Length: 227
Length: 316
Image (tube, each protein chain N blue to C red):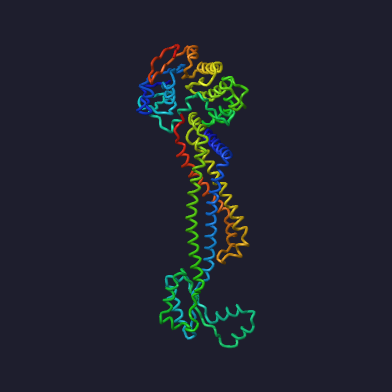
């Protein structure tokens, strides 16, 4: 589902590579946690996957799409196949919960009927039924993040990328978010989660890829993690 | 297809929402574009009116030659044939002595003294030839031709030749004024169109800056470039639309509405009555032109601005 082959990303020569010859293979329906300290290269990895950045060298193939052959104008099509959740949620502040989720469908030209069918379903999935009319600023951090997840999955992507989704949340809300991600994974979506929350990693017991100084320092199944 | 239609509808809706949200930013764009379009409209109207005035005067310009009674019909016919072969001669009309008398009588039908005066004696009026030129600015050619000795002999030396000289002068002046106004109009339109575009540029630049996070989110969610650019273009086209209507209202109110005042002070060259008539009878054409110009300025500047300013690097 995700294949990185000797991928290097250098922002500036003086700084050295942010990612250095990283190779990673993620199977469909897998749940992979990428851990590492700030600046280790986690965010760079995700930005490469969403094509916000291009690798300096190496090959990336996601969902059968070879990024070398991807034209700029086809990038939107790629992003429609990948759900992305951010640490800072990135909800649109002038739209309510329903509209924020509907927005992801509007972009791809979905009809009002499709929107009215699908949005309530994902709201239920992330346990936010009844909050449709709330504005983002009226919600708690955990609720906002669940809205963001609902927005990321409403188009039923094969892959969900979550970049530190619990970074801004207290432990209780963080766990709510993780539970939703697990549920989505059970329904068949490949999940790539970055975090530096040791407790979550240890509790999840999933494959853990550790990035250190731009390199993969360990890649273990059902592993734990300590800083 | 229906997905595209959905998207198209949403782009328009989003443009309208953006327009109401940015109304204070939009005001400057609309104001300067209204000025531009008003200048265009004024130029069109003034040009049409001046051209009308010139045509009116031009159609009355002719060269009249008065013939001596001793000229034979053959000589006169020969002269007319030769005249007709001249390049600048549009038409030649021969008015015989009898016709001249008839015209004189009908023109002075009310004045019995004059009528009886011409009736009592032998017809005192000369036969004449009226020449209508193509180009009133080249009357000299015709003058040179009719001043040749063999033709001069046919002409009444006392009556002389009438060149409608004063009219020619008036026409020269109006022609000059028209081309001056047209040139000044073109320069003003270009300058103001550029200013409009710059201001629209800035409006869009600020709108994009204000919404950069939203735009980045849209990109990451897979919105294609037109889904993001489209609403800005719709917004700018709307500026053009409003400005076009405003320019018509302004011209109608200020220029035509106050016509009685203008008429009194006008130089007699600007026929406000004709301007009004032209405005009314060509309203649809003028509206189309103004809308076209406004929409074009809005669309072109927003397409360029969004291309330029939406290439922002993702924020850290």
